[in-house]
Length: 405
Ligand SMILES: Cc1cc2nc3c(=O)[nH]c(=O)nc-3n(C[C@H](O)[C@H](O)[C@H](O)COP(=O)(O)OP(=O)(O)OC[C@H]3O[C@@H](n4cnc5c(N)ncnc54)[C@H](O)[C@@H]3O)c2cc1C
Image (cartoon, protein in one colour):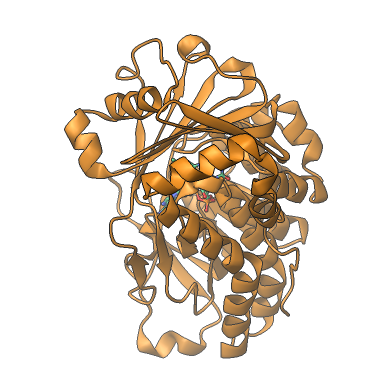
């Protein structure tokens, strides 16, 4: 079974001239959990699959690093449970909420804390092992279609490697899984995205083991007036730090590291060591959705189709669920692509994750009211079972339906 070491072989998988020499059944853009999983499933089904990733791989990602119970189950069902276990991420069974020195702990269905560098490498290696070809350090942009292309049996994608002219490659189906920024869609003009006003931005880093004293098996969520910070111990004891913060607050504090420390310490989490010297990764405003997560011969999965602030830590479960649901649509689209397929993809995606995303939007709004957070933490400290309906609702995760054909 694939593991993170297999990523050492990744860069040799294919080069741009090799990639452009043929028409692919499926070209997947982005090797996050959504893209890597979609590529693996397509390759396992015997389809000629190319997975293109902009960054050198493995790479870090701004994230809390918590795979929730639903995501863990999805990987286990797909036969990737052993690969996940080998990464050595600790199990997490509790979420600890803190605000202004008050705290409460809530049991949650068991998940796994794992660094994104390691997890994404394992998933990309699994795609390669299934037969997908991998092209890292290459940016993919879906080409704008001329009007007469409407009946063509493929879609053009431009591939470019730092500073070199873009070259076109053909694919019968394209999966856009390039995350929040949707860089792959910028030339198309057919995917309008709406960003929620005052949306917070994401920040993430990896802190050394001694930077924070954290209870084992627990995600610690420090909630402040300008955002929140989640910290959890991942494999080898390091601490994954993920935050959703008001960009004005980061500017006021002077740096991402200082703003994260301020939220942690105000909430009652002591920090030792300089967070300023860590490498911080940021994101665009987080809460957004693409009005139509499908185009001609293009399916959008994971964050590319829309995302909500990460407080409940479900983004990877959503990415895996939508990626896993794509295969029957890919297989059908290879035969004939039509409006019915597009409508059914929209409906399938909504039935898989629409309910969870609505619940997360509600939680994100509640978190902006300090009195509501105070009330929630106070009540949960006395009656943790009050969280049960929310935890169960969110922990139930994406609807398990994977079809729509
Ligand atoms: C602060 C923060 C904390 C979070 N905490 C959690 C958590 O604890 N648990 C959880 O489940 N989720 C969490 N999330 C959400 C989670 O990180 C995302 O939902 C998840 O990564 C989405 O996966 P994806 O595959 O859709 O996209 P991504 O993981 O973003 O992957 C997209 C990939 O596409 C590549 N790419 C981009 N443009 C191109 C291009 N043009 N060509 C080729 N490649 C391209 C990128 O380099 C990247 O590798 C958090 C998010 C943030 C910001």
